[in-house]
Image 1 (tube, protein in one colour):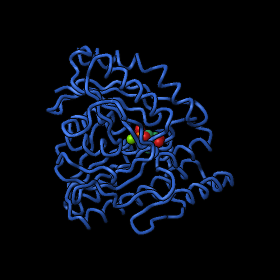
Image 2 (tube, rainbow, N blue to C red; image 1 turned 90 degrees about the horizontal axis):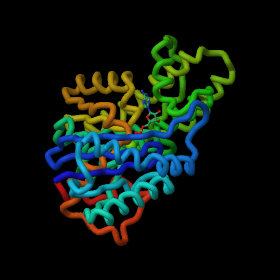
Image 3 (tube, helix red, strand yellow; image 1 turned 180 degrees about the vertical axis):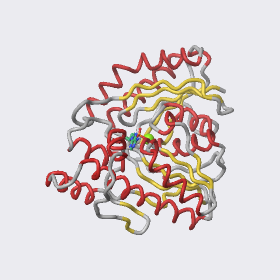
Image 4 (tube, rainbow, N blue to C red; image 1 turned 135 degrees about the vertical axis):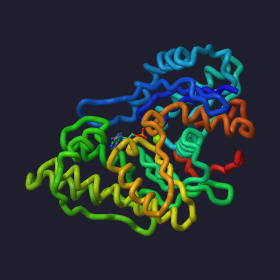
Length: 326
Ligand code: AMP
Ligand code: MG
């Protein structure tokens, strides 16, 4: 079986193609970027409208396939921003009805976890999911992927991007902050906000903005301290989830996991507790259609495959999904 997955929850329009054996045949994406300023929800939708046909063409070319070879069309239903989500769903329905291919809608966060498992061969991991909009520590327990900890306000990537934008850097800010942080040496104390198993970033953001405005610190030191602080928060909560569940594997997901310092900190933590760290390739950490296509394969056998009544679910949570495919 060959599944084509469409990702459009936020900045990235992606189409991935994967087989039911987990062989990736294509991963085509086009992401919204800016030199200055951040994301504007409507512009994301228009961006996806503009690039969708080209991304589909690129994906089919990479896979050396035609639409008649596709057995299942999958799209991300949520969580995400309504307009871009809608563009992806509409495109999925068009492909499905024109070519008479069954269609399945899937959850974006669960897709990150499942693709991490199939690509790295992790069996029963804790997922540290650090992306633009989502920040969650997820693990399977009793029929569902449970959220053991999460952000109480914005996602870690959004937090990093907003501070980058404040300093006059464009979107995405994460890679730019990582470069600056590598040149920082002096740790400047920042609030460290872990509440139970949850984290929060808005107070740290305000504090960083004030420190930036005061011009008392080097930008490199601010970026270094930002990374050291918020990554330590994430690693602390991930470690506690592993201790609580007794799981011995950690999988990383989400674009912020492209960051080398975050990976290094996770590696040290896993080594200390004799656990294994699994990191998928960067192209599967950031938003992409392969994740979606793979969860489609898993859910395709049990989900509704007719597009009547299928809709976007902008607020769907990881633990709303009953895991029937395990
Ligand atoms: P996603 O929403 O999963 O596609 O990930 C996008 C987010 O990842 C954005 O907020 C980026 O700024 C962030 N990101 C990408 N690369 C890095 C990096 N090297 N360090 C930190 N954040 C990053
Ligand atoms: Mg994501």
